[in-house]
Length: 489
Image 1: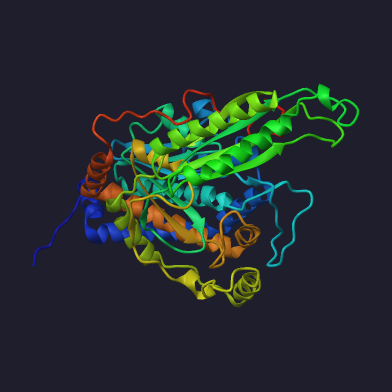
Image 2 (image 1 turned 120 degrees about the vertical axis):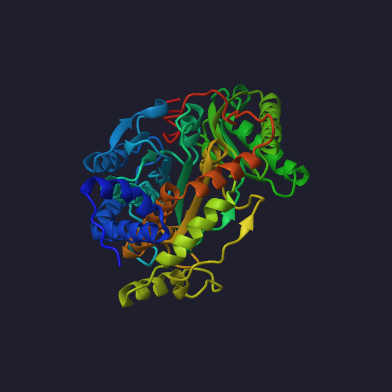
């Protein structure tokens, strides 16, 4: 039996070695998990304040300020207004050179939908937007993970840098694309993210590439009854375009998705409208196909203008790639998600969930699914929705997850998502995500092989000779894209 005496200096030298061991890493994970639990109520309050604000893309001034101030108070150095976007920011903490791990945070709401914290449909009359995609939870949960990781790094002396990227306007504004274009991710080793959902999952999935634009038609106003021959209807231009696009649907690849909404169509039936606008999304798993489809949509607009005697202009609003999945990262995230576990409802939360489920499809899963973890699957071909996380995933190895912040069976962009996200159900799912991300950050800081594996896999997915060209081109961020048609343009 040997009796060893350590000096303080020797112990400090050994700390990184101890932390890098399996037992040390697990202890660190327990530490960051407890740090998040200790502040769970506070993070819930922050998330619900952002839920109340419900600020839309590029106008999330108070939401971004609340999150960035929380980070600054925790010791992060915060740069606001990056990439030419007032509500975008990067918060950084580091002490010793080491891996650079980033976490993404979103906080924009969706326009045109609102709901009270109620399991029955109850819109809030004075609110024009709502967090139907749960970004109030996304942003706050990511901040919680970043702060806990920083506290662990600082206390342990583990080398490395943690960054929180405040990324506005995910909903159709492509805020992250401008940040990628400005090189803000160029020196990062790994990026992490998460998203609210009705399930807990860490599967490796791609997404649909997406390009959007506003098509504006200009005509001549006239009295629709006494002088219709003098008018040229901008609305006719929009309707002619829409008709041709709908005919085009028969002749596009099966996986294509094209959606539109008329954002301005005139004000009075007896006035020939001299201005009309339609807002389009074009999606496909392959960004090259999106480019081709979008060009065809533009041609329909040009033909519509010619046929109706109007003029037309097009403003590209956003363009995003498909997500590059990273199996190495997803396996690590999945392992940590299994350790954290899902969301368990109290009797009151279960009653809320059961009432809300009455407005969901009869095939919705049991509410107990919120407590389970979905199996790890791999899907290389994109489906479903789109996200500007995709462009980040082409710049740096990126991994993510979802947590059950909504009642099982709930769809994103629904009033049911707003309702559950405004309650303790949403807060609990957020904490699941925050713990999982922080624990994965511990793995990345203490396991160089995981970082290298993720980076090697990422490079293997990038085509040889490929250079990043944003689908939205060189346009400036559309800071006014959520303003009413005809205003701020």
